[in-house]
Image 1 (cartoon, rainbow, N blue to C red):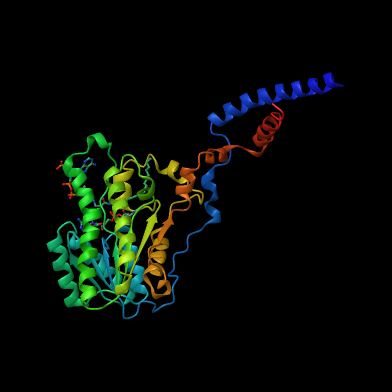
Image 2: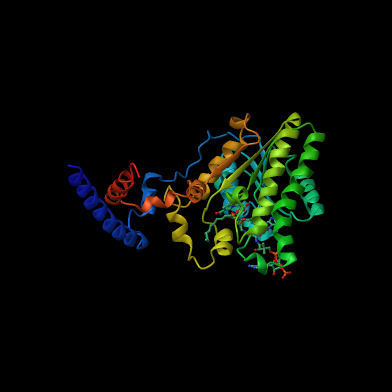
Length: 333
Ligand SMILES: CCCCCCCCCCC/C=C\C=C\C(=O)SCCNC(=O)CCNC(=O)[C@H](O)C(C)(C)COP(=O)(O)OP(=O)(O)OC[C@H]1O[C@@H](n2cnc3c(N)ncnc32)[C@H](O)[C@@H]1OP(=O)(O)O
Ligand SMILES: NC(=O)C1=CN([C@@H]2O[C@H](COP(=O)(O)OP(=O)(O)OC[C@H]3O[C@@H](n4cnc5c(N)ncnc54)[C@H](OP(=O)(O)O)[C@@H]3O)[C@@H](O)[C@H]2O)C=CC1
């Protein structure tokens, strides 16, 4: 009897061992489900989510509002009734965007040239804004600079350029407006756009990772300190959303796009309209109890990269039968 049981166990172990070799071969050949096919479960919606008029009589400043995600946020806020000011270095681009959005929504978008690295330029930009619209109700710190680069190739000026735009720029805009709003006893919503690797850090974008982490510390700190002046501070960490500015500097050949999509559990990149809806909600009076929040908006990419067993997604149901048998076969060993 014992010999029969041992014989059966031995045969099972042999089957399991040879199946395991086949399984390993197949895994190295990346068998299994294509993760990207899941996108059909998660179609993006493009229309504005909040009720029309949600930002009537509101003024919004969006840095980097001429392009990419900043442009999409400006379009949504403007559609919902806000008077917007967009600020960055390239006045021609700002003016084109402002005219296009104003003509679509019927609400005025103002273009103001400003390099956020220069505190004097920021102060002049706020002077200009005060004259045009008065102080803002909504501030979105969205302007950024970034490029992929091995850290051993970074010059001091490369480091300074990125950290000046991202951390110092955000601080200059936030402090200049904060002080004037406090003086005028006016409350406001501040939102910073960071990135998922502000939390984890990431090689090859080290100045950006360091500066974005600093922005998160700044916003969490001010959420605690300036609530007494009527100010809310929140953070959105976007995952990959195709914009010319980001993709041309982070994946210039396009070689990494497919692998990026494959690791996102919702099987696709985000869209500018989706983050614009989230930014509008966070900046609106519907979110008046939200402050100090860090909202990850990445289709699940962060947790997908973090979990060390997540690669097991490529194991097929048949392969699981084999793995399970192998694991059960360890009983008593
Ligand atoms: C596994 C790979 C996965 C790929 C995934 C696909 C994509 C995923 C997307 C996910 C995105 C996540 C986070 C995104 C964060 C972002 O912030 S994206 C926004 C990007 N947008 C911008 O950067 C717009 C603005 N950028 C610029 O204007 C410029 O790029 C710059 C350089 C930031 C600033 O311009 P400027 O002031 O004119 O500066 P320069 O004088 O040109 O340069 C200053 C110094 O920096 C050095 N430099 C510049 N470029 C590089 C480079 N590519 N490599 C190394 N060094 C560089 C330059 O030489 C200067 O230094 P020196 O004076 O010492 O020479
Ligand atoms: N797209 C993505 O996948 C992700 C984006 N993000 C973040 O989203 C935000 C928007 O990025 P995205 O729209 O993709 O990229 P863009 O390059 O389109 O946006 C960056 C904006 O910042 C402005 N800017 C750059 N330097 C300065 C400066 N010195 N002073 C003032 N404005 C400046 C640029 O305008 P100008 O050149 O006229 O100055 C531009 O409009 C950024 O904060 C980025 O870090 C985060 C994670 C993922």
